[in-house]
Length: 288
Image 1 (cartoon, rainbow, N blue to C red):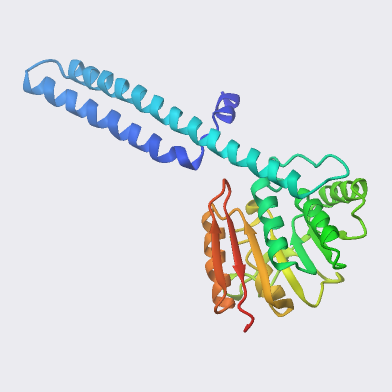
Image 2 (image 1 turned 90 degrees about the vertical axis):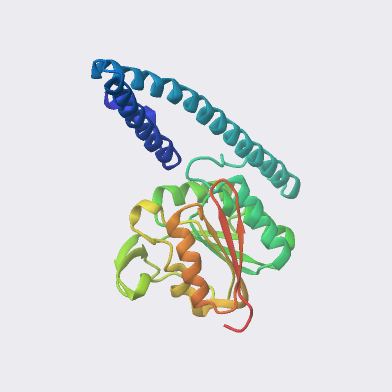
């Protein structure tokens, strides 16, 4: 039984569908009972009639829901395929790129990072959450030949080591540095100056002027608003026209974080990219 519920994988998008299905079953069952009462028939016949009617309607709704879900997944997959193809046109990797699946950066995010780097040509890049994005940005820094550097910060020691191995495979270890920064409870850096859990940056050589800040960690499950501290903590190190890229803005917390960051960066422009997981790009106006 537990295996069945695990494989079922009900997600947030399914909640309205399930809720309305329950409402319809109750409504038709009540309607059937009312009809049976009106025609002086046994109530169970009316209730059964209502349930049958609701069942037929649920089957039709299920078919529609399934069709729309498959159509949406196909569209998302097409976007990912197109983004990956564009990445390979802009970057010539010396080794196979890691899979852009599960917790890794999506092709849409990697392509957006390339786009931002081509426009703004950042010299110092700081990233929270290492992986394929680190490799892609490393290639762009190498291509732009500005002696740019990328510092990628990761809380997962094992995952960070895998990224370092990949960077070595692509001969990018001189451009990209991946450092371990465990998550710890810290005071005063959370929303409203409250305590929160975030990266421990003690002893890390953070650039004094950050031109591009990429926030794709820590994971959502750690604590609410877990990615919020990135801007408050590094605010004084952001260059005049720094660009901040936040991933996973399809989630409620990340949307709220963008608005909270905007308050800390008066006049900053915000651009929303409506990809599968959502991306927000904040650009400073040079006055903060």
